Length: 403
Image (cartoon, rainbow, N blue to C red; front, side, top):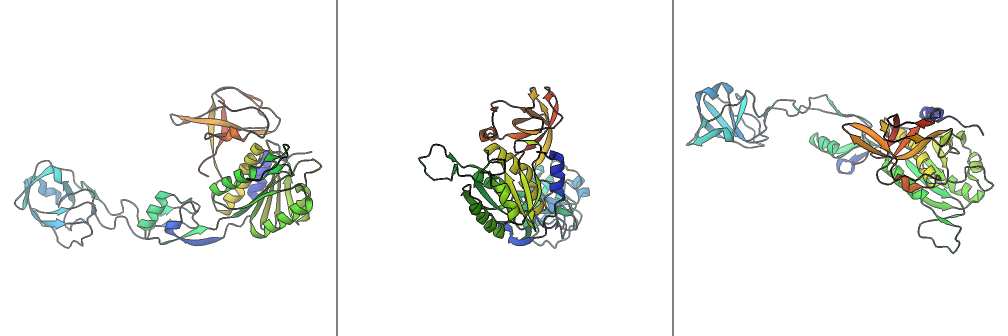
């Protein structure tokens, strides 16, 4: 069987026509974790007027040398101050208050002594001290948050400051997830057949896709039966943007998924990619819907889900990239086990701003060892031409957090 190179498969994936034009409006307090559909642009300056950044006395800087100034009264935060300062005068002004007209500096309370309506200057300050100038935070017209940004706590705070009651966000792509195979038991099922194994793939992938911003339809498991798989897949495509299955894509007598997909009227984009694990991955498209058939082993299905499902989800959400990839330095020798592009679970450390990789406590074995991805692991990428990589070699690493 001929396999596409990993690079070619990713290029073809990137060229797919994916609908990224669907949006909805949600309340700001329901926007956390969603992806912005439009730029957030400042409509005014922040602050809109010179503002006190500390408690103190607003005054003219040139008056500090006089040593004593008359206090006209208080200027609390939120007060629409109308008084205009003249030479020799000051107004007690609090953090967040509008600076009175005629003032250009705020001297902190600690720097003066107050007595009987006057202050004595004990320690002078620089011109403009403790005053936030107009537009210090941002200027009207500034793009504060870009389209495609995943909304976090800081984005919520900035938009609240802009009085953004409703937020336009991308519609979450709906991803249906199913594990196929007569040998697997769904969560909570009991069996006296010791040959059956517990299904984890559909739950692993559901969690992965939700963390990437998708809405997941959990379909559980399906036996190795063509008609049953056909019926389940057809129903899933009626309700989801992407259907992701595990199992049934290899060359065995009971691998029916690869045979069912063409019967659904879907066009196979490619089947078989030169990667380890997961070389029998299959990608198909039916109109605006996608089918991604992944291998059945837990580690294989998770890795291929990251490599092929996350980019589709990311494109539908208008995000610039599905995950972060960095260059890291090997802390130990590495020998590649196949002629394909390999994705190996690894540990990533950051020291003095530089990434390092090692394989401490990572087991070497089949593509079923999902525990290798515990403890904040990452995926090290070794290319087709790589064979033996010495300590100190730089490698590409896919970080598995903050999708």
